[in-house]
Length: 465
Image (cartoon, rainbow, N blue to C red; front, side):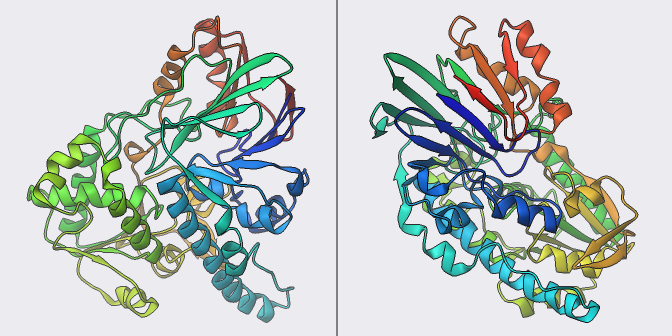
């Protein structure tokens, strides 16, 4: 039995792990690698295995870095089922279709510039047609219901509390008289995250693959989020500035709107216009409305028991058309624009940044993690100039970073996860989906708890189980 680490190794993007037994091959995640355009295209285009030989794909949740390369996998021969929770199936279809559309639009824009400079034209990684071709392979499953997709393999999805429909996945493997319980956290959520139920940990594992995005950090409490957001908005309104919030259309945008709605109801933020400028965010919010039975008790108490929609209130406007989006550039009163994507690698946020990054009367507020080499990370790291659509701009806008919004578990959450699998059972721990300093900081911490075999795999590394 072999475990291949094909993405999300010493990085937080492009998650992909292949489990190979004597009877089958299964893939955990098929994420899009995000970074510099040329590197990302090469990494996403080329698989180190034959997709046609994979029997099934198991998807923990619908973020692009976990599901974004599925159309390419199918295009290159994968024909098996894609197992995911029902909300994840609906959300992944939206995310993938939007990804293809944005690639097609961005390629048109970039190629206009490349023609002028005499550079060769580029192509999208996949098209909308490629996305539609993989829809029929999605197979919905329910939390806590064990099923047997292949002989000798039992699988159970457990609520991960990261975004709507996110799951940790338990694989019970029987091979040559041996039984193995392998757990994959996907992206591990935080307790008391807005809207969502708390994570339900996998138990009594023999092998654990866990994300480590914030393995070297401790988050502030969830109570801080509302206070910090309230302070930023009130200060921006006082200073008369525009606020841009790059935000993932799935998960983070719904969380921000939840807090803004609650703050507005409490009269704690000023009466200024708030725009969600992302068609994808509007559509994914629709899926959130379809599955409100998945929300936590606090959301029911604050909103649902009074038949209030958490995602709609008086000062909030969802922007659809490109013309409406462009018109926001002409607003001279203080206002807030929430726009995708969070890593600023695509979507309407790029156009807003292009028009405002050199404006000292604009604030750019980052509310999530950004991978290395992404535009968001470069701005967050203090680069004085950045390239947007191939053109260079000086960063004159005021930059603010709010780490408290993260939907990932922190160091304590990751270390506490193993408490449900004592060292006598849990013999191997693999630390993935984290930059090297984050993942490696956990090795000694796990060993101090009695877990001896703790590894931070390199990209492409293979382990015998």
